[in-house]
Image (cartoon, rainbow, N blue to C red; front, side, top):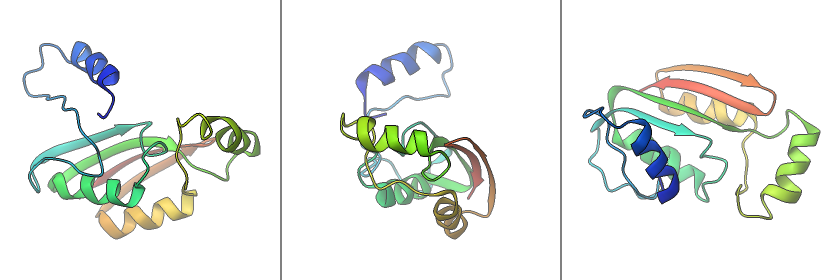
Length: 132
């Protein structure tokens, strides 16, 4: 995670799990080896990342073949109210960073990178599990 606060919360939650490692870093420039990890998890992150294309490339790069990418984040075009909130408040505060994908745009990105995609939309949130 980029945020030290979120990293500390994760470390507390995963205390006692020696096989789980919490690392501080920038998703657009991961200091990790190619094809090293079994699982990459991004919960509510992609809508905040400034370079989403690079973030998708980096998460794919560090996953082993057969590895799993699990994520959820905001997508645009599903709720006018949420889109307004994101564009007029959350983005202005710096909590969300445009551009934001639609469901179709996200499906196309993931289809180009992953063998299997299980994607669900609930309101303005997308939840997915992809296999490399």
